[in-house]
Length: 142
Image (cartoon, rainbow, N blue to C red):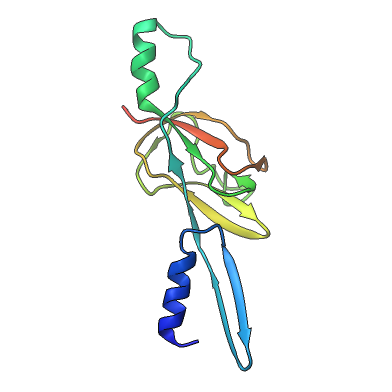
């Protein structure tokens, strides 16, 4: 493959769920892997909170879930003796690492696309997670 063919190939699989690939052709080989996972923030349609009715509508609009974009095992700290990346009550910034997902011995960083305050951690360290599963609830009004 020449460099142009490689660029076109990589462009064609950019928005697929392919995370890692190895290609061999005679004496030539090509290996690549995507290095991080982008967390997707989607507005919540229902949040169960015990609050005054007038505040409930306001809070629903500002609370968004951070969802997993792959299947794997959630990792909340970089090591057993290390502190969690985030916990309830922490303020987070855009592009901040808030966790990791291990899939087939490959660690993917989970980074946020929103700024706000973690109001609920929905998964625990070592928990198996699914594609699209909510990991955190973030209040973007804070």
